[in-house]
Amino acid sequence: MEHSHCLNRRSFLGSLAATSAAAMMWPLTGAAQPGPVLTRTIPSTGEALPLVGLGTWITFNVGNDNEARDSCAAVIRAFFETGGRLIDSSPMYGSSQDVVGYGLQKLGHPPRLFSADKVWTSSASAGPSQIAESRRHWRVPRFDLLQVHNLLAWEAHLRTLLAMKAAGEVRYVGITTSEGRRHREFERVMRQHPLDFIQVTYNILDREVEERILPLAAERGIAVIVNRPFRQGALIDRLERYPLPAWAAEVGARSWAQFILKFILSHPAVTCAIPATTRVDHVRENMAAASGRLPDAAMRSRMIASVEGR
Amino acid sequence: MGDWLSYTLSDFLLFSARTYYRLFELYNRAIWPAQILALLLGLVVLWRLHRAGAWQGSMVTMILAAGWLWTAWAYLLEQYDTINWAARYFAIGFVFEALLLIWLGAIQGRRFFRPYRDWSSRAGLILFLFALVIQPLIGLLVGRDWKQTEIFGIAPDPTVLATLGILLTMDKWPPWGLMIIPLIWCALSGATLWTMGSPDAWVMPVAALIALGLAVSRVLSARGQDQET
Image (cartoon, rainbow over all chains, first blue to last red; front, side):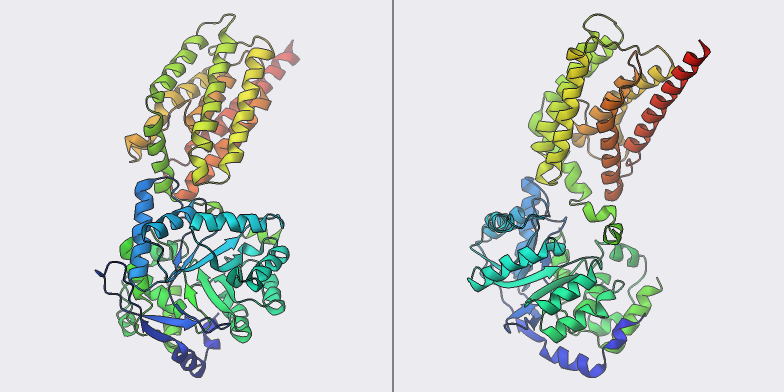
């Protein structure tokens, strides 16, 4: 299945033109010199968001291990130094929220932060208290984005989140899913409710969302966050046995991670991908994928063919 | 239903192998020198197994129960819960098992352990010795740091296997009610380690299957003897 053929060259060029490059200088230390990071706008407000964010699933769940917490704080620092903004977490991710809060406090609460979290409880009434608890973990006065995690009790939670948005307690509202689950219901929610964001799994091998979800997001003006871009690292492990094709340099990909990310980011409906990592060099490598050229439709087809054969 | 079938074990894994084993390192550091006391209590169990007497049953089950309670509080609630929100539910299971052991040894009446009664009892003793002596060394053998060693009485896996081994040495039929939680833990632990890619993920499930097989064979063997008489 070549879903990416749904994208014609004209739509591609139009969308890429909307992708702006901004030199995002983060004055944390003055030591690092971030390059220009490509951004896309959140359709509902026009606010620009860097194409690469930071996920926290597994990687930031390090409990009370101070050494590991400091490593995570170093990752966050590198993320901001290289122009990042959106950090995503969830109450489902163990200690990840608290580790993010620790890192943010250590960095003096970077004002560029775009905080994205989720509500994840089967109890409708427990939603507000869980959100308040999450906010305490993050040590932020309010979240920029709150999402209903994996559509769990979504009717009640979405009502809560929309009421919070109306009251100015959160800026954006969204829903999430992963690994292609409940896409029909997901579509229905997208059609029937005023969402600012959706979060889905999308990568060079898992492209089901190209058929309906991403076009619907573009049609409805909903920003798209992409989770699991590397299939929890398994995709990179699989590809690293092979040399990176020489033609990957045409779009500035210097590693398989950048190759995979650039494929995702080149889809015009995608607003931001959120790879997770525990390593500073990896976060820099990921952020670098959000600069320079992005593949066009022909290149995307070539990328798919090269990966599917491995 | 179809939605649930789409989930894999990795969807439920919340932490990396590095974090999981580092937790044992921090835990061992925090509770030192409780490890020595735990190993000494393991030796007391071994000694009492070989000396049938009025206090044998209650002493052995009390030491096991203490191990389950300690593990529930000091490891599952204080440590594991920081990276796995399900740990608090595991802790409830561990406390329940401890209460069952207390009931078995102290309240229900005197129960005896006979590790040399038959071949399944001997296998139970071997399983206990494995949990006490061999299992803590497996991490070293597969390349983990010695500071991350898991020890009977304070870490869940060796405590669970030691308990299964002891239960197999009981003088009457296997106490199925007491085997349920240990067997479930073996499955959970094996699944966690397998999902993390730990090379020793097979240890707990294989030990559980052996213990279950021994218990079943003992029942079948006892039934056969009943029919002959």
